[in-house]
Each structure stands twice: as structure tokens, then as C-alpha cells.
Image (cartoon, rainbow, N blue to C red; front, side):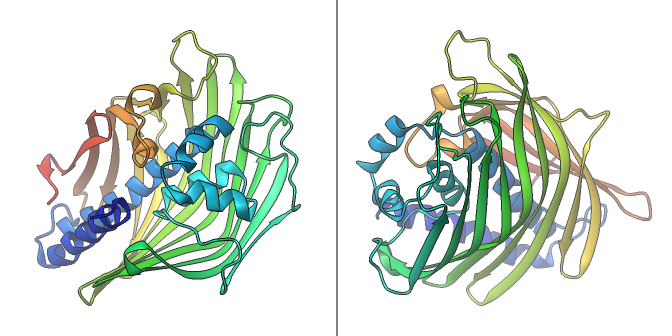
Length: 328
């Protein structure tokens, strides 16, 4: 089985589990299927965090381009390198050749300025209107736009912002289809030599069909958190460090599924440790957390509390629990 199909099979399995859990009993007015769907959206946010700190250097992309065609074809389309990591985060592992029919990918300006060569242009917007078929007869669709803006294009790691305008990715294969829509923005900004501030204000909507079962869930984030690079003595502050969302000042999230809207709080407990240096591998580099946990808490009108916990025990290895019980 190709690496593309292995990735897609994993995504389809999660969707099947969520669909099969629809009859589960509720726990604090939060069902197992609710928990599975929320966990997937939360993992999507972790993937985007990985894209935020992923290695967008020209050296990394040159090496990756020899392993698969995404980076090489993205370069032919003129995509900013950071943009390609965002595509990986939403599950896009393949782009067609730049001459392909039914595919329009345009970046404005056509040759963005990137003085510090960090993979983030001074300012550029990429617009997608693209439908194509990839390896394994998987169909893809990309629509909407992604805008990137460097905080200081003369200084690598100064920070940058990402803005999504109805950006939608869809991939479909045998008995499954997954569509993700992103709207809003997030940013990372350097505060000083030892601290970065991350602000997220965006909505991640997932629609999934597996064996004719379809569900839609939407998670809207509103949070400020910090990232503190490890004191490891190298020049890359984004290769390893700690994320903190203080339990005493948690982030907020609005979770909508099956016409039900729930207001959640979320925080790290303990703090999440990002470790791209140790955990990096070609297709898994976007979930390179090796310890820590995120908790999402919902209290229903009756005062019943539901806690969804995503906890990492090693490089990309994590468990999901609802009120202390495995979500499966």
C-alpha cells in the first residue's frame, strides 16, 4: 500500500469509528461519538500548530521533494513553502503538475518577496480552485485562499500570520470523503528571545462520510497561548519548545455538531512539548509532540461536566479519553 493510501486509510478509520459510535450513551451530555468528532477537530488544530512551527527551510523542502512529489509540484505552482505545510496539515499529500487541467492555483504577487528566506513571504495570498485525481485514484479538491504575512521579513523567526478565507480541502476515495473548511486567522509573534505569543481566532469545520454515514462538526477557537523554545543551544527556536494555555486563564472554543452548540474551555495540563528535532519523519512531522496534554471541558445546563483529554506519551503517540475513559 502506498504512503498516500496509508494516510487516507487512517483518516477513514477515524470517520468510521465516529459514525459507529452514534448510538453511544452520553456522559455528562457528551457522547462517545461527540468525543470522537471533537477529538478529530482538536487534532486538526494540533496539525496546524505543527504546520506553524514545521521546517519550511529550502534545505528541508529540497530533501522532502526527493521523497514525494508534493513539494516539487508545489514549487512549480509557485507556492510559498509555509503554505505547503498547511496543505499537509489538512491532509493534502499530493498536488498535480502545474500544467494540469481543472486546476488553478495563483499566488499574488506572482513572485513574493521573502528576504529572510524563511518560507514566509513578506505578504502573499494564494487562491485555489482545483480538482484533480491523485495516487490510489483518490480525488482532491481545493478552494478558497490562504494569506501569509511575515512580521519582519528581514528577520527569520520574527513571527507571521495566516488568514483563511473559505479555504476548503476535500479528498475522497473508496467509501469515504473528508472535507475541511478553515475560516479566520492565527499568528505567532516573537515577544523576546525566550517567548513567542500565539493567537488563534479561526473556525475548523469537518464534514466526513464513511460508508454512507455523514457527520459535520465545527470547532471555533479563540485563544492566546505561549510557546517557549527549549534552551538547546541551536539557532532554530521552532524545533523544540513548550506550549502553555494556562488553566487559570483558559482558551475558549465553540463546538457545533448535529445542531447542538456547546461552549467549551480548554487548556494544557501538563504543558505540551513540541520536539521536531527528535520526532521528525517525512509524513509525521506535523504532530511532533512527545509529552503533555490538552483538555477540553464542557459543563451542560444541568451542571454535568465532560472532559475530553488528548495526552501525548511519545513522538506523535497519544491517547484520547472522555472523563477518564478511553474514547474508542
